[in-house]
Image (cartoon, rainbow, N blue to C red):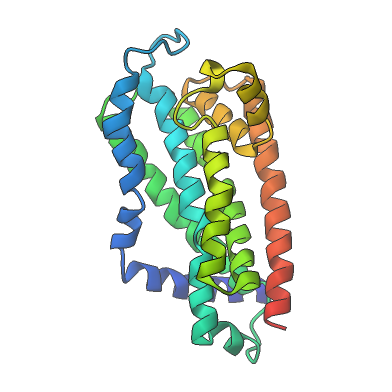
Length: 252
């Protein structure tokens, strides 16, 4: 199938270009690792639901995974703006490549990078004493990666539409700040007042964080798990569909 072959060829090209500067993969881990090292220990004396065999990192690390997925994916749109300026997108118009292949290849490249970053972050957390259900940790990756694909697709579409770093940067900051604070990434919102807990339910990432925390403690049957997976699948479908239409128009 032409779409698959074109996507695979572009995926390899994008991945090779990324691996030429692997330092940026590590740099993206700096903030969540700093939170683990410098903020996580502050939570040790807080009551964490009384679940046996868990510690503060069991609650904190899932939030860091979601934060890594959010910030690692929401800002990839800057790269498409650089490609626009360099004429890469313009040259795609005169090639026989499938119009969806550039989007899918970029999103898959970003998903692979996010997976590597998440594994490294979890490894650091285990070295720090993380106690978590191993199966739940693996399932949490299956939850975070589609979220990253959704946000990366959204960011690429914004980049193609706005065509300017000066325009996309404040917009993304405007979106990510309330999403970060309303998702309970740093602290469970059970500590928050009722009005803040109600406001948090607007954010889909609130449910993703709760689902990831439930998986880390091995509570597979918790309702937050299927809600989180459902929202991630819907979000990914909507974002990829919208971004695909934007890419089609940009390369038509």
